[in-house]
Image (cartoon, rainbow, N blue to C red; front, side, top):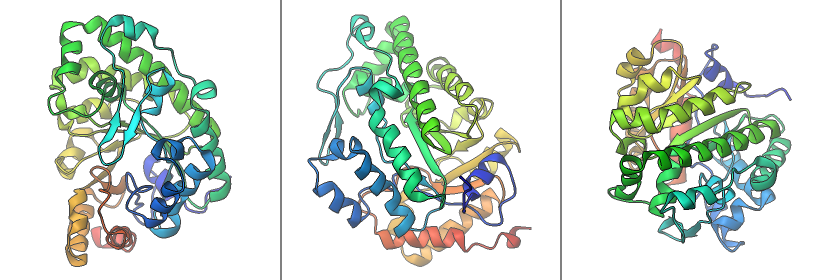
Length: 346
């Protein structure tokens, strides 16, 4: 299928774009009343994730309402853990929770390798439906969580202030940690390959807890597994995003990825110097900027674009949009990016 708007893919591949493409992490979600209406008609978040027709519906909403240049499939990074045999729950206003956690190497050995066909079929079907309904309007992004981030959730049982249980596993039982990371990696590769086969035009790997590790620990417990994933996905662009991993920008950019996500603590010009000219950068507006006035959003967005430049760049936030953000301000951010005249940068 020929895309009517292929700006995102051209930017990811380093091809010329006449304007800067823009989308937002968590754009298909709680900021939109239309999303909340769909969610209210179901029993909860997980039913929405696991009902392909409704997941496709909320995936497309931001394209219709906000005018973004890409859709990202509505799902959750924790479906991989569930596909491996570790069930999670989503508690309203609290977030994800695992009733049972990984506590020993015996628990790890009991986990299976999840497969797209047997364990993630609802997301795969949601991608097929979304592609059909989008009809080539914009690209569709697939995604998964990075193995290290999944390990944290599976060991901690949810979020954490210290991640001491996860780090204890890494540093006192490293063989067990590597076994768990490898199982997650194998599951993630099959999952992402299934997404691509179903029609995903680009995939993003989210390492949400990357910043809790030292540079040395990240090189041991995350980079090798990100490498396996990036090497396995060879027919669509791959984006790697390590929240807080400013120290790993060079290592990540040297992997087989086309796009590197950046958060607001990563200076664009410094990042470009570190990674070189042959990788596309994505980001990195602080989501809290969208609480500001329309004028403030414009000023901050234009400043961001000027720091990144007009090519090999995808505008986005430095993390997911927060649920209490005014959709009109999100739309203003999108329109500010799309109306930016790149000729002023030459």
